[in-house]
Length: 239
Image 1 (tube, rainbow, N blue to C red):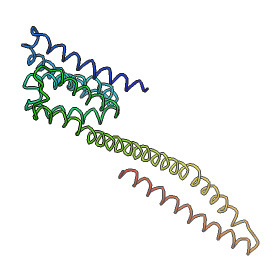
Image 2 (image 1 turned 60 degrees about the vertical axis):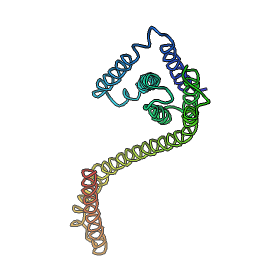
Image 3 (image 1 turned 30 degrees about the vertical axis):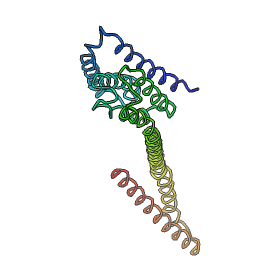
Image 4 (image 1 turned 180 degrees about the vertical axis):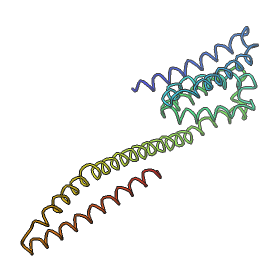
């Protein structure tokens, strides 16, 4: 069993248990909205601090973000009517967020934990059609969230492949430019210099003609190599 999945599941379960424990204590429930406000400030503050951090740091705090959001949403929904709360739709968004950022199994765990959480709340009545429909909506929306998460993951993989391909192409361009500037052009210049010295000293007419033809071909090849190098330079600058 992957360590990430175990860690994510533990955080989701214990966060929900913590919220349920808070709501079960009459001495704490009067301060629920204040706790929600503190969690909102904590969430906004953590994101404000992350604006100047590198991208890898953003990914490393996903678990913290989901934990804060889970606590915040459950407290707010429970305090404003639970299954009849006007903010109940936030549970759907949280399921979608977990599906895109966590594993599929973690999404299923979250849906099960949500159902148990609302079932054990004192005001829940399964005989009430409104309550039952909200619980069924959590179950029905989970496959859609999982599908969305899978498509999101596929998009990220394709984007990473495209980035790697561009990196390889840039490396190939550098290799070609290095070959043209250091190897091919230098060799051609050396061959042209040698021929320019040898041709005037050649007495045989046919051999001299062949050397002049070779000199002309090498000169054209040098010009083509120079034009190719300039073209690659322009394409690299534009990209």
